[in-house]
Image (cartoon, rainbow over all chains, first blue to last red; front, side):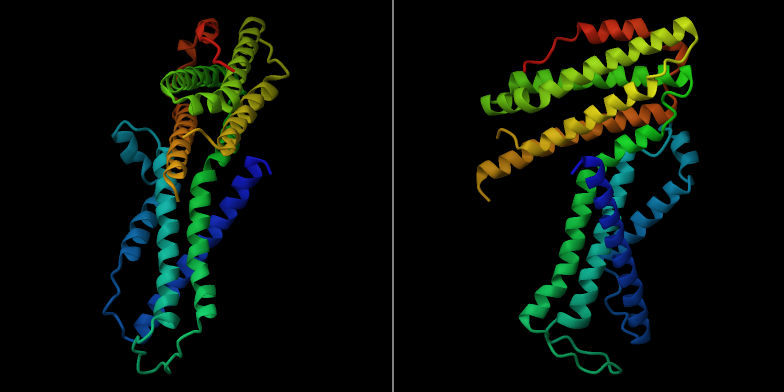
Length: 259
Length: 57
């Protein structure tokens, strides 16, 4: 399964976990209000979900842009965006857990006056219900880890090769990226243990070398465009080759590593 | 979970964070428009990349 597909699956799973978490929270709050049981309303989940939801939605709606621009940051850094999304997922997961534990599982919990006593679940049922927040947490982690797989899709959506100006900007960004990748790989290789060196030589270094050559080819196409004024027909392919190689680089990390 | 497994996970985390961070920086640069096309020198970029030594394979 390609990383792109895995990323999409994880994104859908993560989003489902989030929806489940938020829905259970709303239901829980309604139940608490109906039962006038407000003694333990404030929990870490509430704070996490309130803060992260506010930041996520404000970010998506572009409300943070004036503040970020005023701080000379430009746009919302992707790392922060992902971080808050993960926090939101964790909050949703926590709510789900809390909801089921409180309503069905906690032995000895005093039922509200209007609610008939709930018999404690048998161990098998308890495990099944506990699986929901556990799975939600796993999905959240998977979403965070493979969120990177969505980055090539995001990059593809950028107008990287539509105009020569954008192609030049893309070329500069790719050049800086490869230089940084190469520097990191050299540094890590020279300082690494023999196991790490072997792993880098086998899995990572060949891909980085290929990426470097692909970016040189892309830059050569930009030069042709600059010199002739004609957009080379293979610009999109060359750009997409680089992104595919990035996916290969990410996939290489799934092949284990030296300790 | 033994110590080797923990070390391996830490190492993979380190590698993944660098790769993800670097591509996010790339995307951020493209989205923010901080690179001015008039400042880009394609031939200099190629020269810079070709000067990088190939990593051992």
